[in-house]
Length: 430
DNA sequence: CGCATTTGACCTGCGC
DNA sequence: GCGCAGGTCAAATGCG
Image 1 (cartoon, rainbow, N blue to C red):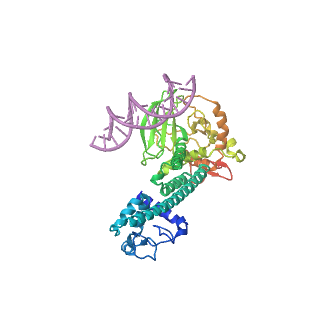
Image 2: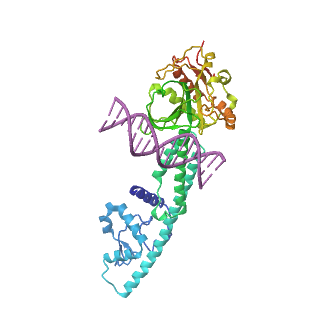
Image 3: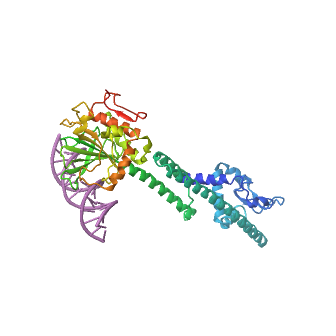
């Protein structure tokens, strides 16, 4: 805070360089404290110098030499004296050697002080005007940066943080300006930065990827460490829903829900939410990259349908679809359908997760996440098109293939191919 | 005893 | 405004 105040003081003083003060045009009659035209520092004034050829007010050079090493500090003090007013100046002059003069001297002194006061008032006006200009320029730049970030929020979380941090470092609001309405706008801008960042973070955390798989275990092992923090009975499902949070790193926002399917108790639905903020073991990379890619896709929105891959009609089981019934955008990967034999010619596929019971990988399809309550809505129809666009994203599909490859345990290092140019998935080449 | 799990209470958003 | 459902918290409990 103190450093910021000093920096602002320097900024204001620097901004005064080259500025022409009103009194500069009248320098023959008076010498002014802190005048840019007179860079020699004046600590005290000898109002009663015997040197009649000089100006009325003479700087005391001896004092200047004594305090040369306190240049900046004393300049600040002098500016403070200017603001305080004439009383302090009068006291200063008394200490400069006034031994009590005649009435003529007092009258003369009064005239000098009044003139001094008037000029100081003008100087203060100039300073105030310059501070206002600096402040207005800052607000303009602030809004410019703000608008720039609003129009580029898809991949700029880091940008927002950097700009906000820089804004905090550069922000200085003088105490006597805090009641200014324009200063309040700075606070609003700051709050707006927070809301933008929080909004992005919240949306990142709310995007979900659900995996349906057959397992007799209470929870599939996906390579991460989880801690259970709650359990609830969900409506329409006699099986409780368990809530877990990632404990591999402090503050990791990733959470998951585990619940058995009401129609088929052998099916376990695991819903992931959020992105890990820490390195992951190899066994957890596939699933994490899938959820991360899905989250990114949902945030960036559907792409143009003009470049749809051919995989959707040929591999309908690899078409993730947004959930319409879930409260948040959700992509469900269904690994339970036995019709997968038609597509996957290497049965049985053993689930690599550390469940005690091997699971037969079924039809690798994606479907609406309505397994728990069977509800449907109009949103399903509208989201179907969105989901079709969703699958056209090569990054998401690459991550999806990686996850599926790890799930089915048949990823033999490069055989499972998905390329942007081919826009197709070849899980099992001939 | 420390850590993980359980479980009831509490909060929040949404629909009526 | 009220009730419901989903989600989270935190004290109580269990276990190694």
